[in-house]
Image (cartoon, rainbow, N blue to C red):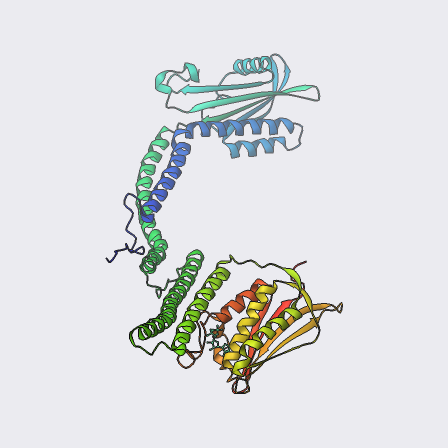
Length: 505
Ligand code: ADP
């Protein structure tokens, strides 16, 4: 029965209940606008009278201090004049001779109805006494009743004066060279309620305008920002649906460009993996099916037709079974190497003797077919490596060389040592040379890939699995070395493996 499997790459659905980036951006803009407006409103409307008053007061204080320190300056009068006009204030400086006599040092009258210049002499002495009692400083707030020509302290002023100018009178006393001076400064705080009302209207209008503007901006900006994201999302959905040829467009900014590059790379790699997977399945099924068909065919032949039960036919069945076994073994080996599950057992070994023994065994096996293996080496080498894996790699190369060597049927195996600066063996190179047809230059890279065969049809019957060289490459890497091939068409190929003599320790 056919089993239906759910396509894991089914396109991703839109997430419900999640807000889009456009809406979010607008929300952030709106929050930002409201925040700015609140700050503006607080400073310009709510706290404006207090801020205004505080500023005026500190101006008065600073001016009074500055004046008190310059009382002996020659151009004191000019400085006082300048301060008064800059700070919009009236100034009176008195030289106090005793409790009821004073000399006027400077008097600057710039404001209408100021406390200093519109009160009598006695009041000034009252302020003097109060300031003295208060530690040399006095601050008073008044309102002026124009109709009755009267000054009221702010707390006691009638209700109907609440929207009139507030007069602040700041008095300080200073001692200089044993003399006492009184500085009286008067400034006006105009009511700001009318101003704040106007500002209120303006702020409401500005708020509305800013909200509309932020909506428009959010829309434009989000469109600009989201366009590449939306496009990448669309392409990603195609990728998820199995279209590995899909391209991710680079957006207008760096992060999106990098993301697009990464996804393009991922798509390419996925495409390659998918291609390899298909090729792998095709190869494996082909390589498995052929010997299986042969085994089945010959077994049926021997069963059904009397006289076909010959040793030759039985040998074919055995050969094909062996081919299957070696294919399965190679596949298992390779998958172990590629998954990183294969580890090397490093040990000190006389590699020259080990290879010589291998070739002796091999020679006695293939001598009957006329093949000859020759081994030459420059010195007997003891090295630190995994000899079993190295022997497997050399074995694979020798196997190939026997398959592909020329009519002389000779395969030359070599072992050469390169010395380091200290004169000790540094690397060992193992070579396997045949006199065969050679390998075309454009195939030299590909032969190391899994299941790659240069001439798939011609050699199939006698050639192995297409995994041998991949295993060699993996072994060379595992043992910390490298491998390669030099080949000349018509003359033969030389495969080599180069390993460090002391891979570990
Ligand atoms: P196979 O089992 O097919 O030999 P390999 O991975 O060992 O698989 O080799 C891959 C391909 O490389 C071979 O199919 C063959 O085309 C080519 N090749 C390997 N060794 C030789 C050689 N000594 N001479 C020529 N071609 C070779």
